Image: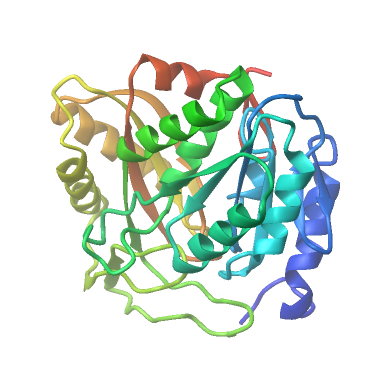
Length: 328
């Protein structure tokens, strides 16, 4: 294993210190318990909080700032943050508008956010993100929350900034989740620093279809295909889930898992854009890059969100975070 670390035990703490120092104009770091929160907050707005295991950067800390999250709680690598982190973050950023937790559908995240919500003596609600269509809806814990989380956090964060109340933010978040579907493919595994070796192995002529974002295997190991065929497999599953009408406006998000260069991600975007055109969809907005990663995994996911005028306006609303910035 070759990584820029001194020790796996100090990796996260040192990285978070560096992140907060590099983006001190936007965020600051709290320790014991650990969370990142934005510097400037509007009194009376809904406080939007998310979090999860580290290793997915820039999700979630990179989305803390104006127009997105008020705070993010980072756990250890691929490990859920603790309820005391979430509770402390909520108490720090709640400004009389209540708290909305955005939670990826993983057992640890769900359990710990539920515990924090029960302990929080403020109005609060939660939105559960489960956009990964590689798993059936009948799976034991349901579908995983993956790259669609970025879309939910941006749109709901904009709504909170615009003055939507807690109930409206929750309803909006659930509507975005229902309008969003994702599917991922990996060309390599990732290497968790504490483990020191790849989580799984693939031959040079193999790919893993339907992977999550924690280094777990997907639903099928198969022969490596060309990029066009891979896009078709991903997009077929997403469209089968969303069943968009002809002419439907969509947001197309190609997300890298951490080890795939932008030249390949933009190639995948072009092929996915062509696919959308062939299937009567209008790509109105795009997002290309590594936003929901799995450490150093080579691979990507394809996400579509069905847009209406309200969602389009909220996506376009100004945002100023470490990872997303426009209109400010």
